Structure formats: structure tokens, C-alpha cells
Length: 71
Image 1 (cartoon, one colour):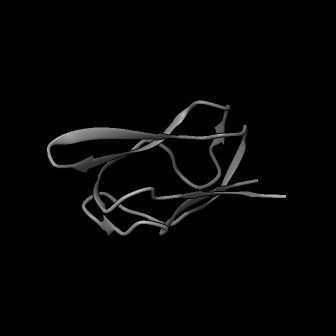
Image 2: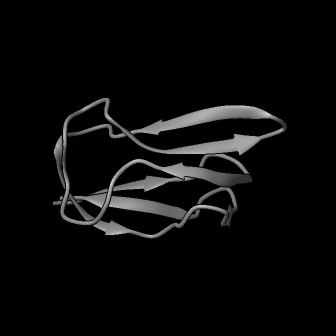
């Protein structure tokens, strides 16, 4: 079963910390979003392998957009 990591707000993707195929642990930062000059790290809620990375640096995400999938 895979975990979908979704954007919780409208924000810019400031920095991508992982790539597809990377192994991550619970709590690892996947991407850092920027909104209203605040940096918001998005962490993995479970460990596993990043099977899908759906964002790129500089992209704007909307609330509910897929950021990554971890399987």
C-alpha cells in the first residue's frame, strides 16, 4: 500500500529534497514549500521508497495536490 503526500495549502515548491527511488524514513523531509515568506517542510508520515515525485522546484501547488507517493 502506498502513502500519498498531499499539499496542505497553496504554496510554491521551494526545494525538493528527494528523488524517485530514494528510501525515506518516517519524518524525513521530502520537499520544502514556501508561502508568505515562510518555509514549510513536508515530511514523510511513513518510511518506504519514493515511488512518485509529482512536483518540481518553482512549481505552484494547490491544496490537495499530490506531492509524492511512498510505497
